[in-house]
Length: 94
Image (tube, rainbow, N blue to C red; front, side, top):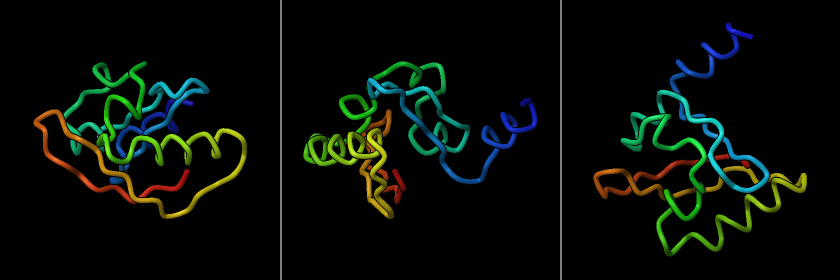
């Protein structure tokens, strides 16, 4: 389990996850680097309303809702708003 945790934490790609309520429960080092939010700052925050740009919140929420019901979406572009207010584009699978 520790080896898997280290692999996720130190991966050279952003890895983040949410619980069934849409709150962040996974946030690796690369995600923290890209967004400017530490794991501690991101943990338990609502992903969509906290980190996604307002214009995409509805569509991102729909993709996440589908994923939580077992319907995957591949290569979906998210626009994250960083802590400093910049926009970062991430291609994700949900």
